[in-house]
Image 1 (cartoon, rainbow over the protein chains, first blue to last red):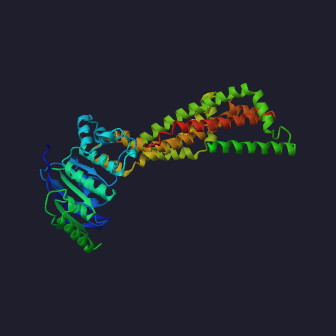
Image 2 (tube, rainbow over the protein chains, first blue to last red; image 1 turned 90 degrees about the horizontal axis):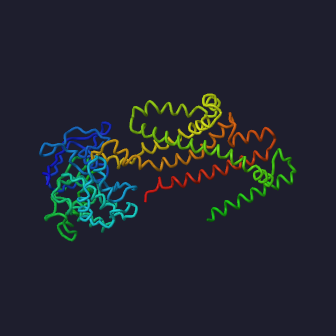
Image 3 (cartoon, rainbow over the protein chains, first blue to last red; image 1 turned 180 degrees about the horizontal axis):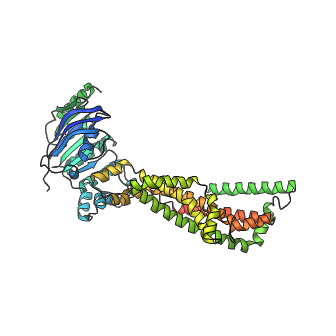
Amino acid sequence: MIPVPGITLTGQATIHGAALFAPLSLSLDAGQWTCLLGGSGVGKSTLLRLICGLPTGAEFTGDIRASDGGDVSSRVAYMAQDDLLMPWATVSQNILLGAALRGDPRDHGRLAQILDRVGLTDHAAKKPSALSGGQRQRVALARTLMEDKPVILLDEPFSALDAQTRAAMQDLSAEVLRGKTVLIVTHDPIEAARLGDNIQIMSAEGLMDVTPPTGPIPRPVTSLDVLKTQADLLTRLRKVPT
Amino acid sequence: MSRWIAAVLSTGVALALWQTIVTVADLPRFILPGPILVAETWWSHRWIIAEHTLVTASEVVLGLLIGISLGIVTAIQLASSRAARVVVQPILVFTQALPVFALAPILTLWLGFGLWSKIAMAVLIIYFPVTSAFLDGLMRTPQGYLDLARTMQGHPMRILWHIRIPAALPSLASGVRLAAVYAPIGAIIGEWVGASRGLGYLMLLANGRAKTDLMFAAMLTLGVFSILLHLLVGYLTRNLGKTD
């Protein structure tokens, strides 16, 4: 297995001279899930896009480094709220997209393994339009896994799903992404309470570290500790000036 | 199916109205021949009309194939190079500001009275809509796809091939459908300016000899040909925009 680095982002961002977020420092511990929680427009997605090396429209001053000193943006895989499946390509072709775009040989053995892991073997030859929202998001997860990167960045990946599908996707993701360094941006307190080894609330003033519930992720929704953390997070979110 | 019945019905009503006006107003046949006379003339001249239709059809089809190919190649070239866009786009817009009709005599002078001056007219008239529709599609790739491709460290040419071109095919399809409507216009204008064969030539010839019934027969043949071409192109491009 590829050694998994931690990631540290330190700095501030402005849009047309106005501060988007104040100087802050975000650490993603190696092999852990970090949940970044906050209202809309506080710059959560900007932070995630900066780590991906994607254009943001904001001006960032600071630096982003990996704990092993290596390059960051070449070692991340990205998954967004929109599944971003190519409607003209089959499930398999979508999962193999990265290899096609780089001109790498397609690894059909690994594809079969991953399809099996996310429960899509029977759907491999279908087009995305033939799938449900939850299945499509599983294809997106499979495509992320196929990239085999040590750092996974998830931008509100489950927010368009219904509650029971979302919970199932959280379980599946926690299982298949175990051991990777994961940043998940969300505005759902229960998602943060279930999945965060670290939980950070982001606001215009910076980051606030919140103690996560006990136990390994994905934590059960029935756990009293998880529900208490959810309530605590929602209370804090409502106090954050917007 | 009801669409077809409606089309047949409305055509029937229009033809009946046409014949009624001609009969009631007692119009001379060189001013407005009735549909029955036009049909008779069409039947008695069917071989001549067929011969000229074949000429026009080859001009249109060749013009379409060449114009669409050039449009596709240009759009891809422009999409893959910002410098090319900056240099070429103003020229493209300027050539479009020129009325293509004004170029017809020059094209005839350069390329002669044969097929090629008409093909060139058709190409000129469809090149811009195809290029601009396809280029527009290529430049509007959903940002999410491009972000994803970027995090995958995709090669620009491979991103073009695997994402931008497939995502732009519906735009290309609308450009091609537009081209199928324009191409016969280009060929007919070319024939009007100077030709010895083709439906445009036949219409001009019949008009000059006050054979208005033959002119109508040729014109209606052109209309039917254009509709068939439109349907054929619509059928051929139906899968370009489909996603399932």
